[in-house]
Image (cartoon, rainbow, N blue to C red):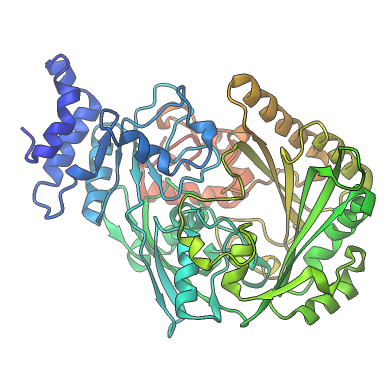
Length: 542
């Protein structure tokens, strides 16, 4: 009999349907009984933190952190149950019991996995549970040491806001989407608007707290430098459960400058994009100019027409006069003028890049659900790295592909490298895409229609765009970014039986030669492959 009456209530819908020994022997029933046993002596009971699919709150808890409606359908394979731990003992018990009873464990911090693997499964007949870290949201900023501890369930927006509450001249180099969870973001490397000045988010992680496959609580010193290396870019749900990260904060001026300049084909966008690709990575480290290409409705004529538009979004760590001179000297083709530039604080710039309206208070960053970057659309993403300038005629082919969709349905987001990114060795972290890369391309496709036909049509489009770009991007291997997970490039076999050879197909695209070291670390810290999904590093023994 369960020691906690509430846990018995959870079990009753599962146990009482037939009340047979066979029902009692189901993995999820044994898992619940195991949790009860493991947590029996704890002051903070885990029983109220478990949601089975018979719990009235199951759907709302599951859906709260689903960021891609593509993986929230009636046919999506969902978890047997969700655990929302409040302390480390809850995490330890969940790891132990899921391993003991053969259930996959999927860890969710913000729910932004591009293929939904933190809360769903794309493989049939996979029995899994979700460990939702939403209750681990604390951020502690230490201005004196210029560091912060951020728990895995906190969002980037919460981290940014906490820093700004303590200092107007400290910041953290991370991404533009404030609802992304720290646990997965740091685990995949994490790039952002200050990467050319300070590198990746993971480059600025100085300590971490993880729970490993044996349930041990490990910090940097106890996990060892190999595991500490692996968890900063080797992908989530592979080496253990991230509980918290200690990050190094960076200095920023009281005022930074942003601009957002749009140019259509009629305004010479093709030549400007062609020039951008050889300029953006060579600019000083204090500036990043990103480029987004989309089909938009045209406003240049009275008739309703469409065109291709390039939007150049920039952050400059300095005043408007400085960026005007710099861009005027190095990138005059853009035609930047004073009216394009806005000076603001760093925290205000994070609100700007999240696409909130001007003058939106920074407190909006604390909202875990609102996002203007993807809205409520379903989406699919892919990524590439460009190492040689792409010809204008090739870009014109890209415009034709974009023209096949409706306005704003497809996009290429291009992030320049160079600067600090070119100075950090490729082996410094699992993330290998450093010197030699001009820029990264993120391909996106969005749709609101329901049904398999709409999904197939849009996914086919992005795959065709990706195929078209094959000759013009990195080769042998064709690189990809871990945090833009893409199961098209390869996936593991059912139930963790993937061999090294099978996993290497996709692994070298994310990690290049660092993949072998990741496998060695995985073999040492999780030889039984407790932490696994469709695209997690396998141990050599599997």
